[in-house]
Image (cartoon, rainbow, N blue to C red; front, side, top):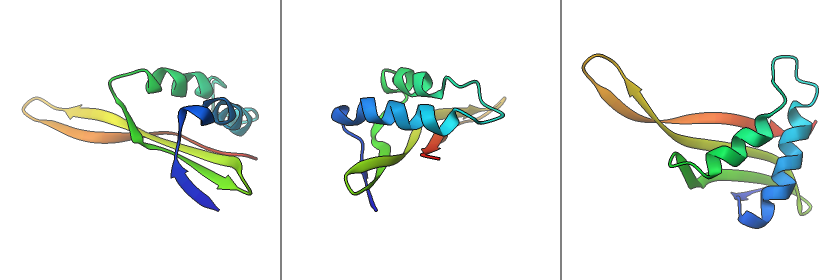
Length: 89
């Protein structure tokens, strides 16, 4: 297995992987693939943290971390959000 950074050429295949991964998930809204498309266009997107897993040249998994701010009454912290994690069934 090879784990590498996602490229623009991967987007169509990653879309399919995410769609397949959540197709039968009980606690999903089955639109996770569209969430990833929106996140890629957002200021929260970090290209280096959008990764794919490949086996024999085929993408079998995807993981995405995006910027997140955690705030309370007196503090603000930079963090990362993990979502979604997708693996072909």
